[in-house]
Length: 212
Image (cartoon, rainbow, N blue to C red):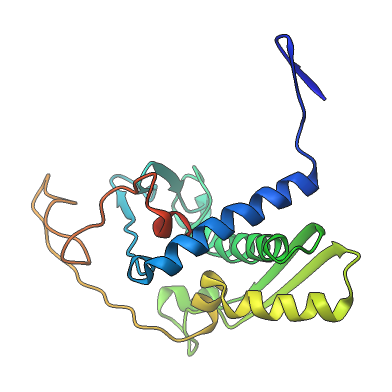
């Protein structure tokens, strides 16, 4: 129990949080089911590098900085792109597991995800016989719960079948790339990968807000 002025404000319990998660998702599902065409969205992110290797990326109101370590010529001013790639998978799997449990009325007290990824560092320089893509990835999901093991197992299977960033790593997909030569001061002004960049997410744009 916390005190705010003369009023008492109760700190939500884990059960309260799960109920809120459940209700929030039910509302999103209802809205998207009523307008399935709005469920298909495009999110746009941009990144720029000037001097050195520091890359500043933005998506809507969010931003992050990436860099390489000193041994690679960077300044170590932020994590590497690989960190964010692995973080996306770990975070997406963990959050999807927790929110699916809450949506289905199961109590998962905590979810912990470990990821190990093997790669050939020489391939990053275009050398050797291997590709630069990860050679193998291992994911371990630990769940603290009193729910039956078979119930948990089936839930994890459903989660992975619908987890965007796990599937982005696991499944082949279509990726297109274009490049443009720009004059000084024109970077970021000549076009985007799509014909029109998506506008910033509106607070009422449910479909876009459901995506990472």
